[in-house]
View 1 (cartoon, helix red, strand yellow):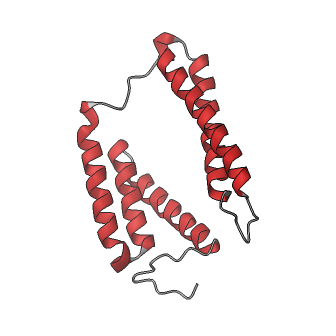
View 2 (spheres, rainbow, N blue to C red; view 1 turned 60 degrees about the vertical axis):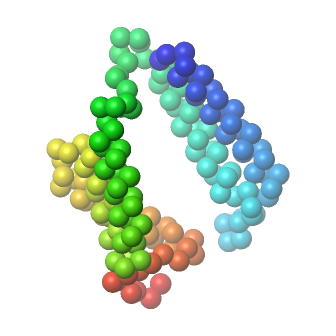
View 3 (tube, rainbow, N blue to C red; view 1 turned 120 degrees about the horizontal axis):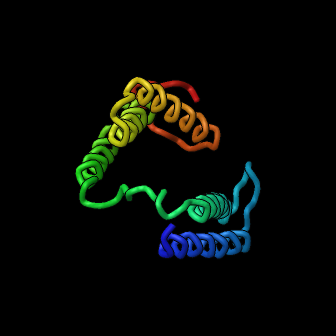
Length: 152
């Protein structure tokens, strides 16, 4: 792991701790009635955990084992397709609903970065969008149902 990557991980760890303590001061509330700091608290815990994992993996990796970065001009086309896909997602979300729009977007994201296993990508996209729909609805978030007008 390069020294700049270590600095980035340590910066994210420090930032997540700052947000974590600030969100506790805002008030967490509970699951039924979350406070203003509930979502920032969860996000900061997630960023903290992932930064620790990335830092530990990077420290364990030998310099000759470093992978080539996915960022750069060689992947500009993939990023452009992803941005266009997000624009299409925004425009079709209300008419066809969250489940179909999210499934299509997830399939596009999976397929762009690993185009070999498209059947697995279809199933993964359906599962991810279905689980996220159930979680969001369980939290009381109103999502567009589109052609699926179910009585949630």
